[in-house]
Image (cartoon, rainbow, N blue to C red):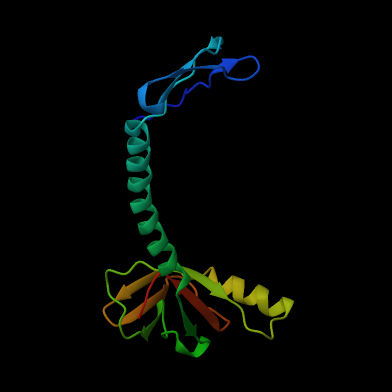
Amino acid sequence: MSLKTNYKDDKFAGKRIYKMDTLEGGLVTLEDQTQYQEEGDIFSAADINATNTAVNSNTAGLSQAEKMIAGLQDKIVVNLPVSGWSGTAPFTQTISLLGIKNTDNPIPGMLYPDNLTEDMKAQIDKSSNMITEIETLDGSLKVTCRFKRPTADLILSLKGVSL
């Protein structure tokens, strides 16, 4: 639906001028006598109904977007200690997360410990870049590093999953 977007205002000099005629019973009528350079458009009930319909349909989409944003604000923190990786490549850790489903698609991110130093950050960044896959399973999360074992404890943040 395309709404009208080229409404025009009346153009005239000075003030509007009206002729008043008196009718029986004390009633009056007004007749516009203004000299218009250009007559503008009327904004009618049909126009406002079309506008409100468009706003309402967009509001429904906004409500869905708000729900998605709220879901992304919830985050789950998962600790991946160096000692938790399997012994040979591919290196994996499977963490129990009650309520997570294999159909969930969380957005992963890295968190840093409060006592972070520049050297720790470099080691965490290097280790987090070793992650090649994050897989959601029913009730758990599997993290895989296909080539190298991480050398730093990692803190993974998962957004978009409510447990």
